[in-house]
Image (cartoon, rainbow, N blue to C red):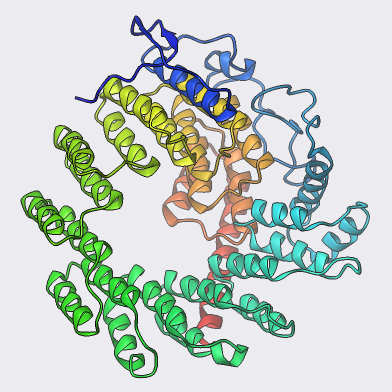
Length: 563
């Protein structure tokens, strides 16, 4: 059992009184607030400090007569909204009282223009020209982040900015745009941009080529990833050890370790490998469940003058964890200690997480004690994993103690900590606690991301609290969090479940306009619901949108094959 850590606060929930010395740092006070929130995990009573839209959400239900509240973010145009600028927390009537109000206003203006003109670059240029916007690097970064899953809008904005006389894109902005196009499988446009970068001295770097290789490998275009590596010299880049390692790592992470091995054998006479090269291959063989090849690569590593290190052993340990062969894992940990290559916090985190997934929670806790005995200090990632295990197992008291020890050992909660706690709260239907955690994130330096909102959206779809869902979507919009295919799918299915079919159709339309190809199951579900409710015209429109999405997908595939 974990030790009880004392802290300065009264915990009504557990009837405990604890004390420590408190410093004046903002982070520490936020951490204490987080502990305070966590102590309320097991009780559900609506607190006065929660926003009104949440406190009374349960009274609305799925049959709210006001059908106007659930709309897409933007203006009052084609995909516009009626809610306007909202804040999930704080003063909802005036959210522009921060130092960034001017930048926020510009981002909102640009967003409205881009959403209004999804199919027309000319209209976008005309409207942006009339906005009176002061362009800055921070503004460009914000907009590209907000539209990172909407390549058309991102590229349209990027081109408009590039045409302005008083501003020039830097290499970072180009790389961000290259990554967006690669993620959305727009490889023709991606290469056009790379050629444009090539006209600017020093703009193309290993970072650029890494993004290209990884995006090709991510859609199983492994030959194209290798071709991109071979193109590096044309752009003035060296095909050195670092570049080779990026290619090998890209192939191994996409489970093409055999191809990575072939590339290595082809290149090793021209490019000197390093220890990292072999560790990449060892990890790749382990991911492919080829332990014999992984162990042979460790021997080859020694023949090249590199001693297997904790990274090498950890890959082997991870594969035995996947196999749930924890007896072998235990002997490997002892072997590492005996060979003067002791397990590090990453090794212990992997083992502990595997034990938790195998529902061996007590054994996971024993790993924590073993790690401390061996002089290895846990880090934030380790505590996050342990919190996840305790929360999933329903051991809330142990999870609270883990959080206590995490904070008092000097490990400040990060975004993964909050995301883990929010996920656990949603799993146990602790709506109030999940929203309070989101409030705490708002006040801290940890800014929410898409993973923060995913369990919340899922929970409130299930609860049929559509106003809360609407406010969360608008909050995501204001935080420049771009909806991806998975989020659109979740929302459409949730809206179908509560018969908000008009709004489900709007999300379907926006998803296609942003270049996503809807999953067939999602399309089929929406079509069935429209058919059941006699919405024939809507059904015909959705059919047209699906045909458009599939047509663009086929066109994109044919273009990629020709590259």
